[in-house]
Image (cartoon, rainbow, N blue to C red):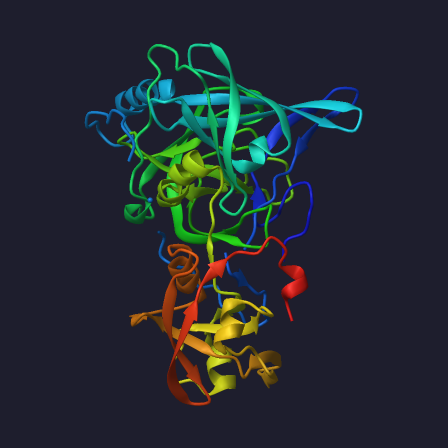
Length: 397
């Protein structure tokens, strides 16, 4: 479970460095959480899904992987497309200034950053690689994916958009770099590898999660929020958003980036409409693991177990069922009686995270055919997806 603390010991929002006038220097935490929600059931498995995201921009010529020459060239190529962000906020009688990062999305002056960087901002200033500053307006935000889009009137000479890579092709072990504004020290570059893919991380501002996140050991810290995670071809494969801190107010070697495919999915809509509507099924659950398989008499460890359905939500209206009780398995109370979704429109679902990924790629109003295991038999249930509600807690049974 995630609570509202200064920094998370498991997954915490990267945050932006904020200096409050008339107060001490503090680091404002930036939260991050569950898409459909994965419950922290005692029997929950740790399974992770396979991750799920162009814009004009120059690609670097091939360089030896990890070589000094390649990294120097990569920094020089990418820097004109990366900005430092200064955010001015007002809380009561105190005025604060926050620091984050972002990257240029297109030649029209649109800049991508995190929602939590600009949330509550009275004024936003971007600083380009050559030191020039420009006032920016917030044209769109999506708290569910922790993405936001800024716009400046004119891009300075030499500034260019960064190309988006395909985060579906990101593999554990490949080398990556992060460029951002850690602790307000702008245009800082760090390197590392992809240490995990397909992670589900918290959005921070809503009770829904961001799927397909990229995990990296590249050093990212408060102030890196919104900056790009790049592959060695200079493509943006993620937007740095969170770190695991181990209790300290700095990176402990585990950072998370919002995948570029979600950027590709959400940002154009934010530019056009200012907001993004996510499809919603209305269930809470977990992946089928050994304990759930035993307790529910399932044939195998596969599928998305439904623990609860949201009152009045799409799943409830279609007749999906949540847990009816618990059964003790090896001393643990394991939920029983809930439906198990094993396929969507005929496509097999391995675990709960795969269900999240599938639903997140669809639109409100779309119908999906779910293959469900219930009481030892299989059945087909058609659900019409809705838009995520603004208030969820009151709907949960």
